[in-house]
View 1 (cartoon, rainbow, N blue to C red):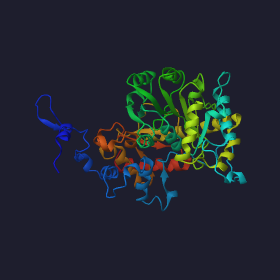
View 2 (cartoon, rainbow, N blue to C red):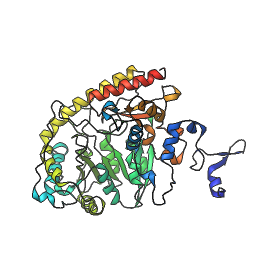
View 3 (cartoon, rainbow, N blue to C red):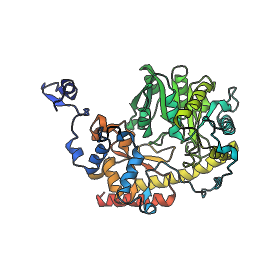
Length: 468
């Protein structure tokens, strides 16, 4: 079929000196480069993200994120048959056993009341909403006149559900977010037509830091909603006070700030004293400041299977977010909500965070030491989360990009997440090798130490095979 003239105009432009037309690499119509075609895993990635399939009603490009895709590839190498022999360093989950020194024991049984068989409120049960509000006031609002109440809290069935609810109630707006960041943002945001998501790349040379000046620039170009994780996935960096306060001051009365704070407990900047990073610290009025926080039991309470999370914000926002659950997800499991209440006692949480931080910082230091011993370089040491954004540019060409390194790791029964997934939908907008995230992988030190050792041993074998 002939290419329309308008598309030709997009796909070619004249060289400024020779006036000879040449193809743009930015084209979505242009065939993959020879470099892509020569790599099986690159062809596999692009084919999985192609726009057309035989079923008219199906768009498979919306079906998965990076973690799901990498797990599916691992299945092809036997991961599903014998997962215990593998090191899954791709899944963004913490270890869940009760053997971390100083952490409280999680419930092993639930007392399911007859009342909990009924439909629960889509905004969550009031006692849990009260417990969340009390926790934030105790940890982040001491001595402040404006305090959270249960009406400032909505309980949601997991972080993704919470973000989707928030997105559903946003007004027509430009929504800014930063890359690299959480892989699901792009897929979730693209579902809605009531706003336009606009990515803004952060610089590796600047340690992927979000400066207050960057926020001011986003607002100056018309962005009225800003979404970011803090601490940040996948780079393991945190924006703390006084910069965090400055960012909130810039946004006040000018933009809605949505803070994904799921990794707030994994904070290694305060000598493992249990301090949790949260923008709640800097809010002047809990009902006037357009700051929406999302967190839950998933990461810092190490209960990803419970699917209990919360959104904290101005009452007007929370009322809308609670109501839209009636047509989006139906609300959170009531017995698990009831079981979560005693976990949120403020002193109990502080002790839990102290133990958590000490344990995970120790794992971070072990992993960094092993990787540095293999020759990897780190311009910025992760000071939060349980992720390492691993730069592969020092490796031979055969394994110096995320997809090839991932493929080589699979042969050693190790799973990591290629950095390409933390870029903005790269398969549709440019050659994969042009992505600033392509020469990275995300390494999770969330699993138990024996799994980390197994995974690092596997990476050593990968390097040896490629004569590093």
